[in-house]
Image (cartoon, rainbow over all chains, first blue to last red; front, side):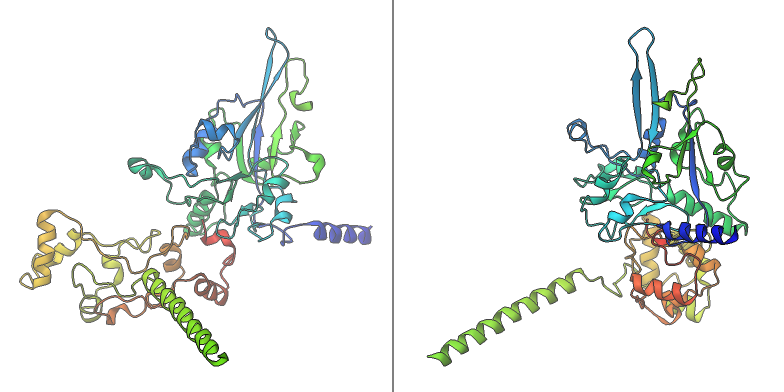
Length: 259
Length: 174
C-alpha cells in the first residue's frame, strides 16, 4: 500500500509540468453557468482592466480581435422553444498546459501561484502556443494600437501596453493578485479568500464567477468545486484546467452542457 | 600589382570598420541615457540631505507607501523657501515657478521601462537603505545615476537576499 502510494506520488511529481512540488496558491475560478446570462460585462471589464485595444470590425472579421475573455453561445432548437447557452471562455490556466511545452523561447511558463503566465519581453511571436491551445485563448497582436490623446489617460498603469508581434492571453488579473499580496504583506497576514477578485468576476452582475485559492480548503472556490455539477472544458485532453464550470440545469433536470 | 590590391582591400576594410564603429558609437551615445542630466533648477541634494540632514522621506513622501517615491511639488519647496535664502538666484527661479503656478519639469534620472512593476514601498518596508540603489545622494550636488538599473543587477540582489519568489518573472514584470 505504502509503496504503491509512494510510486504513485513519484509518478504524479514527474507528470507535473510545473517545477513546483506544491504551488503556493492554486488560483482557480469557478463559473456557475446557471447564473451566467451572457450579458458580456466580463468582456468589457477585461477590456478596461487590461488595456486591450478595440481592433475594429474589419480586423475582427479576420479573427484578430484581442479579447482575453469571450462568451461562446450555443443555440439549441427552433424559434418557439429555443434554448441559448452561454459559456464564458478565457485562458484556462491549465496545470498541464500544452502551450508551455510549445514555446521555443520559454516565454510562457507556470509560476508558483499555479498560473500560466506569459512574459511579453521574451515572446518573439512564433504563434506556436496559439496553435497548441485547445481553448483558443491566446491572442496575437498584429498591430500596435495606441489610444488617442485624451483616452490614453484610461490606461491601467499596472498593465503594460503590448506592442506588435506579442502573444497575449488572460492573466487572472495578475496585477490584482500582486496588489493583494502586497496588502497582505503590509498587514502581516497570509492571503485570505476574497482578497483577489479579477475584473471579470468583479463586473459579473449575477455573481457567476468566483475566484479563489484551491489550496485553501475553506475558500469559496474549493467548496464550489465539490459540486456535482462541476465540469471542465475539454477535460479529455488532460490539460487539467484551473477554470471549473458548473453545469446549467434545465427545468427537466437535464444539464445543458452535457452535449 | 598584388600589393596595390592588398592595400586597397585593407584600406577599404579600415574605412568600413571605422564607419561601423563610428555609427555604433553615435547610436550608443544617442540612445544611452544621460547619467547626470542638467536640471531646470540647480537643486543640490548635498545642501539639503547632506549638510542640513533632511531625511529623504521629508520630500519624497510616498516612498514608504507607494510604488513611486514622489517628486515633491513646488508647494513643498516653498514651505521652507518662502523664508529661507529668498535672495539666491536659484530660489528666485523657484519663486518664479511658484508665482506662475507651473510645475518644475525635472528631468528623470532613474527611469525604468514601462513593463517593470518596481515598487519603492516593498523595498523600503524590507528595510533597505535608499543608498543601496541611489548611491550616496547626500554627497552629490547634481544627482547622478550610480546603478545600472538592469535586470541582472536587480536579480543579483534578489538572489543574494533570498527574496521569496524573487526570481519569478511576474513578481516585477507586468
